[in-house]
Image (cartoon, rainbow, N blue to C red; front, side, top):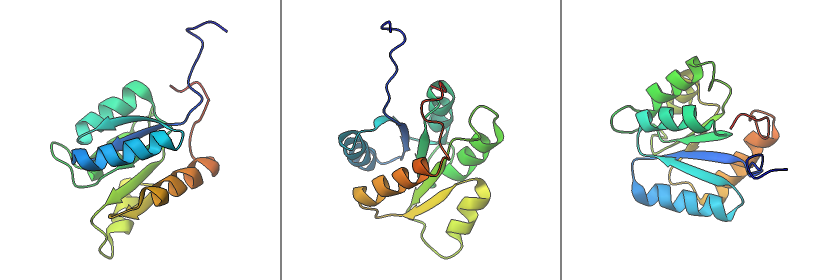
Length: 140
């Protein structure tokens, strides 16, 4: 195997959150837990990152500047290249009906903030193990 053929076997997680502290906390914990992590600060950056890196899973805050997570998820799910990437909504909008709205926007799962990093890792593992992600299929 040549150096150019070496591809990380770690699942790639895109963490989308407008608060730097949240991105840093989740990214550090996910890296520590064995994931490769990339970050985005808003929905537009999330779409750009998803198109360029094709992550195995996306952790999406719904309240974002520039383009909110609802719209970013709708666009990702409408795009042939990214529609199969599972999206986990991670949001402070835990009111009744928001999880239904997140699913209608295309989110595959919903977690309410505050969310302990262990809970997030457990949900990522669950999503990846149920076969909803494209791990090691040359999609990166």
